[in-house]
Amino acid sequence: MKLILTDCRIFTSGVDLSGASNKVELSAEAEERDATNFRSGGWKEVVAGLTSGTVSAEGHWSAGDPAAVDDATWAQLGGRGPWTVCPEEATVGALAYTTVALRTSYKLGAQVGEIAPWSAEAATSGPVVRGAIAHPPGIARSGSGAGEPIEIGTVPTGGRLVAALHILSASGTGTLAVTVETAPAEDAWTEPETSVFFDPTGQPGGQMVSVVAPTAGPWARPTWTVDGTASFLLVLALSVQP
Image (cartoon, rainbow, N blue to C red):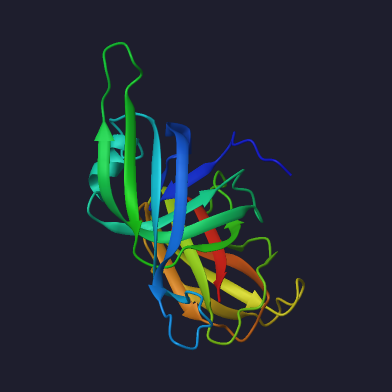
């Protein structure tokens, strides 16, 4: 199936860059290390060394709001935070790639008469993982509740469950506490295992948590508790790291 990129979603820490972007690239690579020896059969033999990745994006410049690309990029430049990139959409179950990355560069400006552009890059400071959206943007949460279960697959022995949380907005007074529950079946939520805990917060921002393979699975769902009268918009992506 061919895919035309028309509705990519880009989340970095507590900011949704989707509406300010028209290009995004995510790359991952492993260093090639020569392991050739006299018993390699006359062929070069290589093994993987360190792995690394980059995230780059560009689009139309805007400023004057904490969620605007200029304000957000200046605030994050030189800092680390989670990134989530969705090739098509950010609905529950949609394909998502996540990583923690260091904001390394920011470029803006062009010639007279052009729409003001921007471009930025970030270097990964952890694994790039492939997973799915567990909580979509655009749904305000208050009080307590649980999201729709998704099947993330069984985390293998020695593997990790990786969760990336983006809190996009906060209104009112109070804090948000988010967890991820796992269970062996889609309808087995009477005694789920709480596998991921995020730090409670009352402000926009991002967190990434990586935990050693939970005993329950392969189903997962988000839960949230809002202490106070606040309301929050958030995005959550879950991935299995072998």
